[in-house]
Image (cartoon, rainbow, N blue to C red):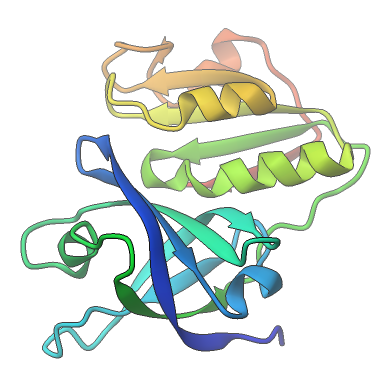
Length: 194
C-alpha cells in the first residue's frame, strides 16, 4: 500500500475559473513528492460540524516546489467546497493524501484521455506525465455541460484536444463518445475520469 500523509498545507494561490470552478495551489510537506496522476486528496473543513473531508482530484503536481493543484467545483452554500473557495494565500488547510491508485501508463499504446465535468482536471497531470516521458500518442476528449469550459487551453498545449458539450455550444453536441465518433478517433487504451 502506498504511503499517505496527513498534513497542514499552505495556500500558495487561488483563482476562480468561472461558473463555480476554482483553481487552488497548495504547498505540502510530503504529498506532492509521493503523488501521481489520477490520485486525490481529502480536504478537511475548518468547520467542526463537517466531519467528513471532501475528496478532490489532483490537477497538477510540482514535486520541485512541493505543491499540488486542485481544480474543484463549489457544490453549494455551507459546504466544505464553499469554504475552500474563500481561502487566500497563506491560509492553512488540513489534507490527507495522496489517495487512490492513480494511472499506470502503458508505453507505446495510443491513448484516449477522457474527462467529463469535474473529472476533466485530473487528466491534465496525466497528459503532462505522458508528454514528459513520451511514452504514447494521445488524444484528449473533454465533456462539459455548456460553453463554460475550463482548462481547455492547457489541454491544447499537451495534445490534440476535442470537446463535447451537452448543449452543443462548444465542439460536438452530446457527450465524449459523440465527440469520438464525430472525429473518427481511435485508441488502444482509455484513461478516464468523470
